[in-house]
Image (cartoon, rainbow, N blue to C red):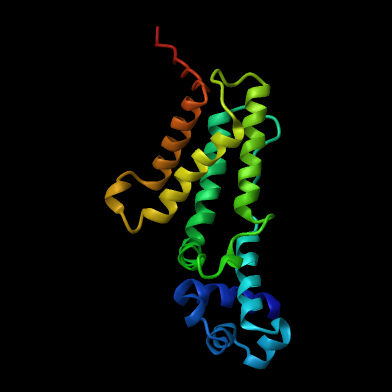
Length: 200
């Protein structure tokens, strides 16, 4: 890993743990295995470093995109939702710290091009294709529907460890349930299970 990338990863980890005030340049440099001079040579200031570190963490790719042409909505959405959930869980401490500090530091809000924006755009496009290719029976607006599924995944990823009683089923079962409820809401019927032939 290059020095610049190592510093960005360290800065995001320290910020996620202790917030802006606690994320001193000395601590970030120590975490990255460099001296403070190197840190300032690359980024100039703590504000710039943390801003870039947060945006870099939010911009890391998070799995395969949804297909342009749907063929099996449940299978495709469950696989995609699973990857989104992994991304959210990996970044949950960083996300929580950003949410706690956003009123004081609005510049830490994810910029266009971040993974959340990409996920929302992908899902809207996929839902539009579901409508176009006749998978749905309900009338709905993809731009309004997409945040419903993303919101369920976000709430689970952020809340499961702090409110375990709200999430009694295992994470993978929860993902399948969220997708099933979502698809039912937009009018996508589950394919009928094939009957196995009884022995003669």
